[in-house]
Length: 168
Image (cartoon, rainbow, N blue to C red; front, side, top):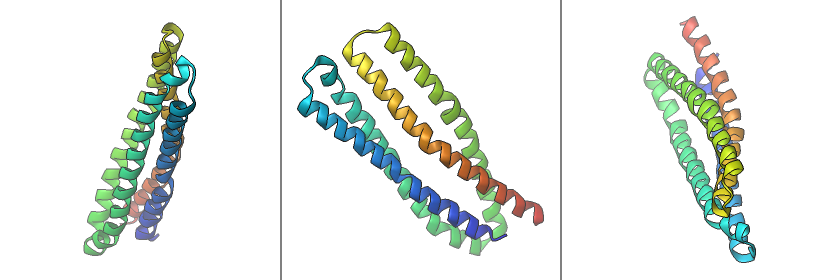
């Protein structure tokens, strides 16, 4: 198995998926602009700031991940050519850490945040709180959607790394 190809394929797939954070973020920013321009009711006006914040966060996340993975893609060939065994070990450590992070943050913390926001919607009746909680739920759903596919990719990549480590 060519682990360098597997690593670059994984990084290229990440480069494809991270712009979706930016696209969703731009959607939130467009919604904020729409609420600002067209919002007549108190609840519509309440969405202006939360959707702008969520959009900005998603754009920032997307751009950060994109440029991180783009630089990582360039480093793979150099690191592999320098010391293949060290490259595999460092990638295994990184993949394990990333999988643990997904388990703790994406698949535990985000659902808890969504549940808390849903409870706030039930018990708090002011427009700004409702708009903020609904926007937070929508942003967390976007993160779950994108990171769910990223989790599957990193699991497959780690399995490839495990196979290479066993054969060495």
